[in-house]
Figure 1 (cartoon, rainbow, N blue to C red):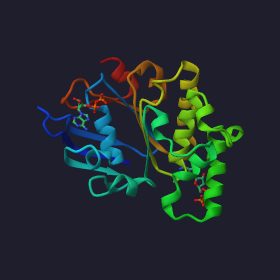
Figure 2: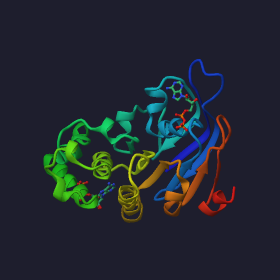
Figure 3: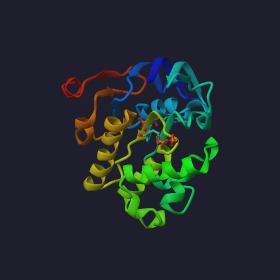
Length: 233
Ligand code: ADP
Ligand code: ADP
């Protein structure tokens, strides 16, 4: 579902590549965890999946990234929205409307769906994420975990096959983090969504992962394996 073939990204003016010669395959319906210290290229690798790299960040991408059969270099992020949903660390940076319901609908607006399909998808996503009671609430009045679930919901309504998350629990207390992780697990198990998630606190999330990819140091190739294999590194 996600495939990197000899992928390197070099930002303009940088002394070396942010990621180098990355080979990676994430099969459909698996949760892959991307770990490593700050600055090793986790966001760059995620951006190469969502198309933010290189379309919005500058720099040069070598090699090939395919997501759901599409080459992310020849598709702009907007053209990937029905294939890849992307959620950043700070849900506030993500929101464009005021209420939970409007936010879930917004992500579908450029897809040309019929109004009744959009309504159905909003309902289905409210239920899936446990947000039905909050539908009319201003997003500004929600807790951190609730906001992060709304951010995830807003990229789910286009029905992407792949979800990319950059440290989605890092700003959350442990209880809220659990809420978000439980939602992700449900997506993988019930809908077969493929999830690629960066995280720096491995122990919090490792139990949810099928595969762990470790970026050991800047510009070094990743090491991947099962959670048990990577915990032993
Ligand atoms: P991580 O997410 O693991 O912290 P990043 O992918 O954000 O790592 O960064 C990897 C390296 O690339 C860092 O040295 C960072 O400063 C650099 N970098 C990230 N984004 C850009 C950009 N848009 N332009 C130039 N350099 C960047
Ligand atoms: P429509 O495509 O007309 O919106 P439905 O809302 O009935 O039709 O959804 C079609 C199918 O998509 C259902 O089987 C549902 O389980 C599945 N589905 C729901 N949410 C997602 C999602 N986030 N990603 C992929 N498939 C999903």
